Image 1 (cartoon, rainbow, N blue to C red):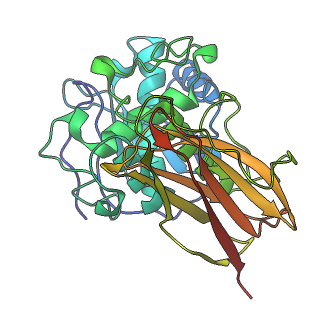
Image 2: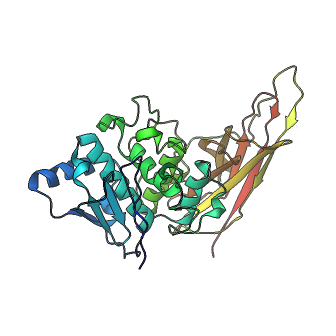
Image 3: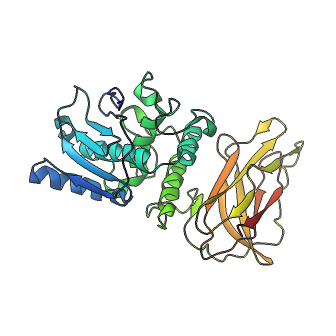
Length: 342
């Protein structure tokens, strides 16, 4: 058994690493006064993400090192210090931060860790291998430089919406973050998409506070039947500039696809000078002989889009990704066929 050294979140939040527990869903508050237990239950109710459906956790009071509000251990225990109760906002964020560490320990897969790691600018997704990986949690780094801590601070920013009183997110959805902006390393749309992917694992729909235009890479429902053209009309480059061609390439073949598990459509967009981040692509899917519009996505820092799907109730035979064009860049389309498991 080994543990992580205690480290503060901007001087207050910490995480520990022990053993992975068996995941039995539920959040229990033990050892608190009735008033404080009720306050913590109210904090949990501020979240639109159902933590109790995903993690098995006991939350209890304890005396932590000075400057620490909470401690989450991977044996399913969260300890909250007296200082966590300094205000309603601090207490709620501390609780949700530590519960997000439990998501990391008990639920998160390397696909989601890697996706956050890359979106937050720490490196390539393939560099992360488990919650104990030093790339994910390096105790030698300052708190806000540790990807696992950034993740645990980012989840409350989408799980606890401003409409439920979260002061760390602007009314316009802007990321304010914990002290010093911790939790804002990755775009909140990407964090929300990762949370939605977790929800889809249990057959649940996306977060109820998702904006209509937010990137939604995972679906746990049958997409709306919105007709798409048989061929996308591509935007021409702006007049008076030299057109630069772009190339869309599939990163993973869609083979052995099954309704029992998620599959991932991954496509990279490149130009003559390299990958193209932050540009829009349209994703359509083929249903029989017809094309249906699915979602408009934005490429990440690696010039990639990822669409997680589980064909339960719908049966896409192919996906089409179309670069919608920008300035002097010429758009193009890519079709990725879907091969189902026999």
